[in-house]
Image 1: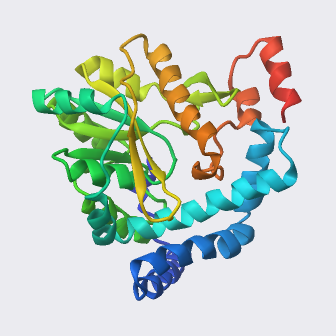
Image 2 (image 1 turned 120 degrees about the vertical axis):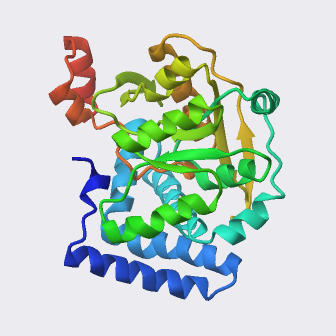
Image 3 (image 1 turned 180 degrees about the vertical axis):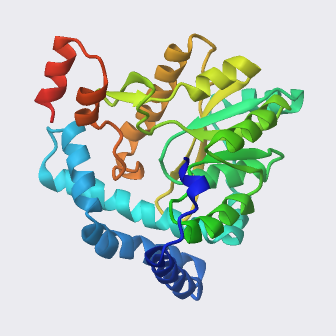
Length: 313
């Protein structure tokens, strides 16, 4: 059964949600700038060390870039954790983020193609990763005539999920939970000529192993397969946080040409990897993208692939 259907509501989940809501209430009492900065700082200095997030980010960085010094990895990890905290409170500050998003002009090699497809009524699948703040690009695009829906993974905690979904919808466009019903709604929106966003930098056990930052990463073919089925334009999009910590550059990359699902998925991963290499501190190093130990257990690898994975454990 999907996590969304479980809607877990144990006493411990209630307590976690109550604490979370208390922190949100405290933060919302502050002006927007100090609010975002404070939650970024609290995540980096308090939550991350206690929850083991910093250690996990450091391990992921060592796996991908072993040549970096410990100090260099720590600097990237800390900045990434600060960005995580900022992104969470921004999601719960929709009116403030939307007001700022009106001034963020999208740019890049894919902007004209996206505009042409929208005006022609052609479906658009915007693809991205856990980089910057994906709600920022949804907000900016939906202020400019788009109805960019989002496919999201529901929270296991049912109390948290209830208000999390409301924040998703606050930025405009529909929000679809992963699962049979949500995906069916997502596909109807695309088929009708709508626009949707999907994050494709997560480990997917039943996916195809593509290269991501120099290491094999099991990845869902979902985006490419949906685009081919519905003749959707596939456009990588990113919201890169600016130096002031509050605003974003909305970067619309050149569309991904239609090809085999495997080739398109690799091209999408390459587009995400390029942005991560440019500003690694804006990617979510906390989440387990590669899971080499699981690849060894569940994938049918030849001897050379198995040896390469074991060397990097």
